Length: 76
Image (cartoon, rainbow, N blue to C red; front, top):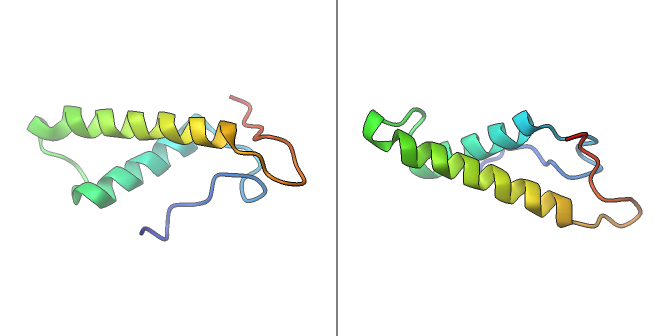
């Protein structure tokens, strides 16, 4: 869908920060909504989507098991 969203799981990313999660979620929401910056009346829904997707991404990465390695080490 969006080639510039980077892979956040090991071994592609050794450590993932909260900023990485939010940036990826923001890029996803921008892509699917078609808005780079939402209008004021859509800002709350836009921001809520970013936070929800960032949390879901963190949960996914925390639960993945990568063969030949340990679970994700983020330093968070």
